[in-house]
Image 1: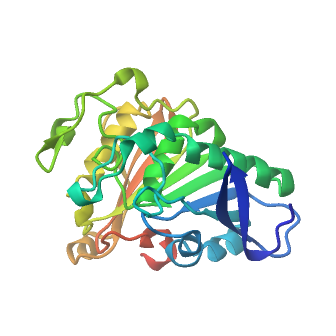
Image 2 (image 1 turned 45 degrees about the vertical axis):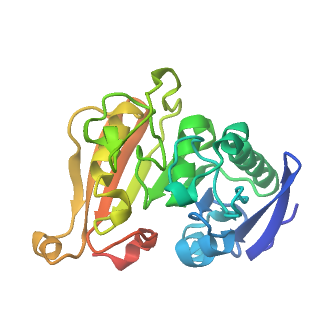
Image 3 (image 1 turned 120 degrees about the horizontal axis):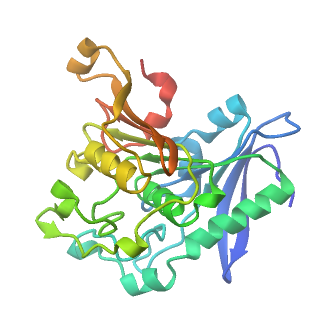
Length: 288
């Protein structure tokens, strides 16, 4: 298949289903630095991911990677939702998934991404594959990291946290404050199927300090995921921070990092003081 420069829309047949995805190919390049996936949030579209959530053209032209913005298929309630961690989500009584559907087809998006990587590599060729996601898209990124890490060379999870009713619920024991969420206890952990990525890759997690969606647990949830899934040890160190005066004024960001982890090259968590539930951290050039 030929892929034109700039933004274009395509389909791929996977498991008898026609799946939609967009590509942005940078201009005037004979080879590409990487393939970079951008996954939209709940109810979003591939077009939103490429154009507004991640501004794929900016990074593609600047750094020479091919941007790919797949689109989730619809769930039984007609919403576009990634099939990530079946049975590990809770959207309240009015928004429950049909978990039988998710359990039966829990690999459908994993297979979609694997087929897409194979298809794109045959046509374009690239040395590395990265995946970024916002909100529910970040849940899918975590799912790929746990289930098919051999396909990836790095991940970015924005506006999400591991281990809450939306992702990773019940994957590990001994979670302290994360044992309950909104008064609801998590399911009994099954350590035999817990996330243990087989390929060490860099992991970047970003969230907003004003994101009320996750009850302010993002930082500690990242630290637990780093230790239990990626095999990091000890306390994280401050990798970068805006000046104290800037932070005290409700601006800027600070980043914590684990290095030398057993199942990760490194992992970094960045918290943006003025940010709510938004993918805006991707626009790193807007921050001091």
